[in-house]
Image 1 (cartoon, rainbow, N blue to C red):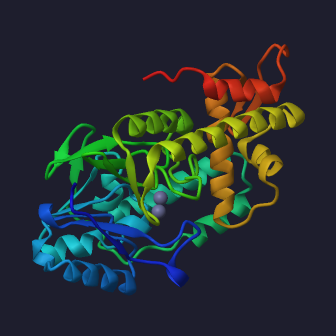
Image 2 (cartoon, rainbow, N blue to C red):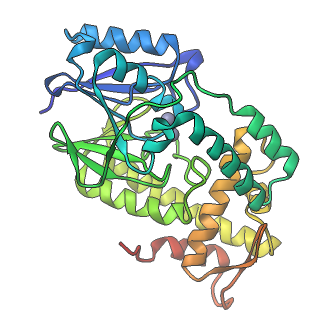
Length: 328
Ligand SMILES: [Zn+2]
Ligand SMILES: [Zn+2]
């Protein structure tokens, strides 16, 4: 059994809805996974955790990061620098950290254009863009790009898109460091957390199957470890049910933008919930579109209508879409 130390790098007042961030130290391999948010308190906790394991910063050789979100990457450049360690991420997410300043500008432009295409009003989009504050991290840092099936210090890289396009899990024996791909209590957002994905929910279905095939014990980016299989079953059940609700809601209001559908499904949303809600509705609509149950009526903004023969109740048809085969 691999020696793994969990370091609670944030929590309480600086934690988010998922709970504080968990970093993982593998002392035998000189590896640190997900060093946490860019705050002094997280840095201090990280440093204390490494010291408590009897290591110095210089003993860390590799910093692995599951995905580009700031609560996971925030301390990565600082640790890379302080420990003279390599910093590695999946190739699809690496640029958002490697070229942070320029990519942040691109991301904000892309998010704004995407949200408007999803039917969110220009006013709400402007509020959201204002809400995104820059992280106190270097404008650029060298990041080693990983691909699926690769490895670092004997730890396998598994590409797990859905929450972000370049989300990766790191697998050692039957333990998976799964970042935000699978969380113990929250349902990871699929669709709103990274606007680069065309069909995030289909990608996420594949991710759940790939993790299920490899991992028994999940070490998540937030909170404590848990058995993976039962949680994957719960997440599938959640999305299956929501898929049915999404199709039934669309049938009631069609034609509709992702945002209009999100308001129907989730009620009033403010702040970043606008992005997560619209993104989740978009993810379900695209998944249903690929199952042949909805079609695009318009392209900008995106407008969807139901596209089934009426022989089945929409809620049941939506559920059935989730049970269909996923192309590999
Ligand atoms: Zn995340
Ligand atoms: Zn997170």
